[in-house]
Length: 380
Image 1 (tube, helix red, strand yellow):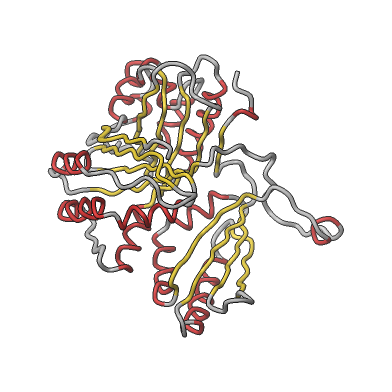
Image 2 (cartoon, one colour; image 1 turned 180 degrees about the horizontal axis):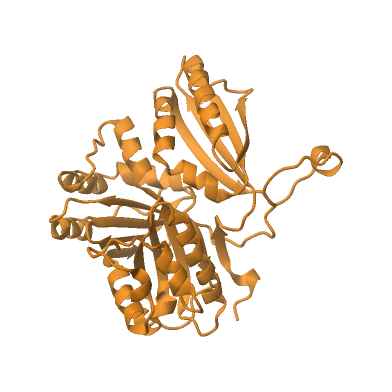
């Protein structure tokens, strides 16, 4: 059996307290405007459930560099706020005074000092139980929808573009890009060694990628103007589909491993709970010696949940395991979290569909996304 120490793991669902670090570089002369925007933003964030505190800091070496740190009871309430339309509206005024930003998120593993040891201060949320083992890879996804009827044209465009250069700089490179479609929804999942932000900017500057994005523009349901930095920032912020959980064995075993993506349309407000359910199931699957699952990444934003699986053998060999519902009552729990209008062009009761083996197999077939392309870059 794979031991806990051999796992590769990241998770937003371990219940530990979260520290968010936001680095900002202001435009010259924008300090007063920034402080005014920050005061309004701070008042809004302070009322968000799960928020504990925040601090604003200014560099002693470069006055244009600022740091905002915030603490949260756990990652889920922060991610819910981050992915909300309210957040998108709240941070929009920052675009006029901030030249560049970088956001980092950390779970709190240990504390020390007098405040923690000698004079305990009640703080909600617990410390991370133990260090997790990583593999040096950052996982992220983007999702957007295209106009109904344009799916075949879009699929052809996505399958035919030239891959950008994998090497970004001395420490960063693109490792893998996987493109899937489900109906008119597109999901682009990427794996990056090194700096995700640097990789995203590198890709955006490549002429072959820009040509693809320009070709896609007429087919998008949500219009965008990539020549306008503010409009492009808003589009890609809303298109972001963060990885909230990843689990993998220490290394692939012998046998062919295939990559698959599954789409789960959640009920309004249930996306996070659905993602958490799948994450718990995948933790157990990786520990199961008989399981064909080598790795799983759960992406979630609002009520869109996508699960990326690397599986040995056919995906439908164990349909319930592939869906993340193997075991007592798991199917019923999933059914309660799914949208009744199931996102597959039909309506009905999901609990009835998932109550039988045949129904589970049918749901798996409908949830499986169409793989458009899956490109892995060799190490350089």
